[in-house]
Length: 291
Image 1 (cartoon, rainbow, N blue to C red):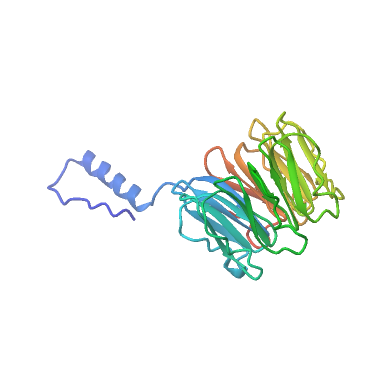
Image 2 (image 1 turned 120 degrees about the horizontal axis):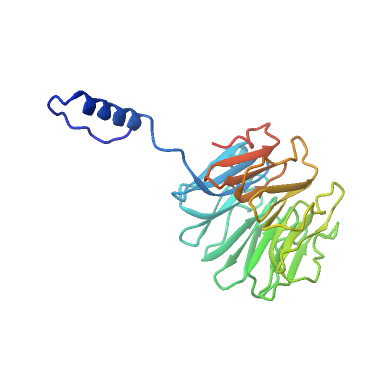
């Protein structure tokens, strides 16, 4: 209930009593519904940033991965059982499983952070990529030089150079680290494939395509997001489109208009134009049931 103190006054005409009662009931009903600016999806859990820049998480909570720090965040990224966020002060904070050092970021000032299955990468304020965590396939061995974007998959990572060219490192079992020669504006690494939007706005993917996850159903996209065996994109109208095989749930997104999208292991979420949240896919641990 609101902490507003209502003063005791002398008797009022009935009309004013009714108005006062209405205000009291409104105060007891609580604050308006929380709205969000960004959402991130991991392995059967998800987190969102509300308009107060606080992270709220839900879904499977092993390793306390749904208990994000109380810091103010500008961005979030989630992996298998850990998450990291870029704070409003340009530092990186991580939480959840740290068995391979994936939730222990180096100190410094950063402009972006991305989380893979068991590793994490960030771009510092000089444009260099720094990675930490699992290094079984060389996914943390980032090249030297300046990058404008970074993404982390299961056992590979990729970055975009200032020229728009993409460089990847780590596992290349399915060609996930062999990007085309196009110039890219955005990039997203999935389980063992990678997708991106060229500077001309064309959606392209490479790597494992056994379930059709690397074959976009449309090239007319404003954003693209790679998952495990499926991918989704947001059309310029805000409507979501997905392709591949979403194991354990419906691949068909709701018909709403979204501001942003996020794709996890076997579910996806989006921030609606109204600021609310909507998810679809596997909901066995409540990952598709946002607050």
